Image 1 (cartoon, rainbow, N blue to C red):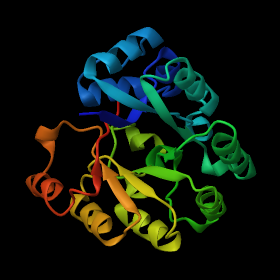
Image 2: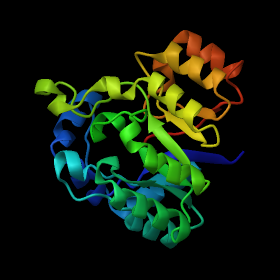
Image 3: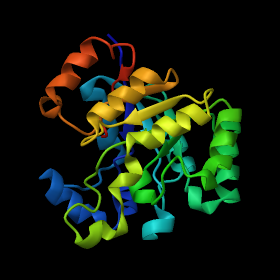
Image 4: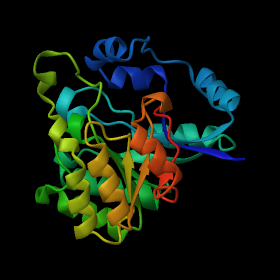
Length: 244
């Protein structure tokens, strides 16, 4: 059986550096070391796990001022290892306005990306904010998809004020609005969506253009009703992602 991991970060030292002040908080939150590896070590992990990876770029420049893991970075990694890395999600900062739109156009037309990942909590915005609809209009017009985090995150957890991040930005109701306003846009919710798992389930079931991947959590922590729904009414909606 072929295993496609839809949510793989580059995992390299550059990727770790991109997360800046959140690295220490993440290590404490997840109770494991949070350090970057060499590219060869990352590819060995993918190979040993038997997965074909879809890489995810990361850009938090407007909120924490760290150098992004750019679209060009993950594209180059993809092209160096095409037998194991099969596609990539781009990253753009909605707050960059026209710059973000040009980055979207380049990522699709020149780099051939499948779509774009958004991290509403860390990028300090909600996807149903109409100020950013021109960006989603362009993505939809290009026929690209979006992967959007739902639910809380370890980024900033336990720090004073969560370093300014608001978990409500990642509520599934924002996905519901976006899906209704852009019915041709393929939307993939990322992560189980806690504490709003039932709301995320409702959105996945109601909106034909919304799908879901369960990265970031070990299955033993999935709520019981989610485990049942994944095998039943969500069986054609749920995909695999690791959040590597």
